[in-house]
Length: 69
Image 1 (cartoon, one colour):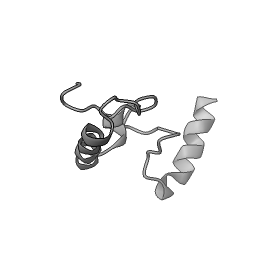
Image 2: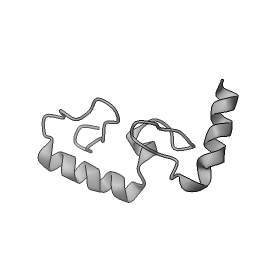
Image 3: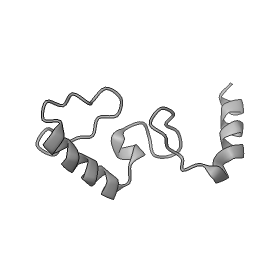
Image 4: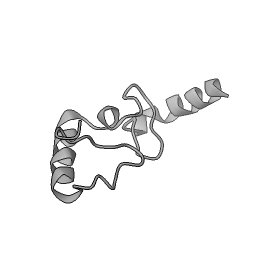
């Protein structure tokens, strides 16, 4: 099964960015740090520190804010 999945993903690889929040794959890993580049990670952490003080949006890929990390 995994071989077929990797073959299918390889076939569409030229048209992908190797990450999607609902279907994480590739070398990035399955953490927020693996899904986002460093600039995007910093921007999201900044937004989260202003708008999500209670850390409500953490279920799938929690964006760590330095004061909580």
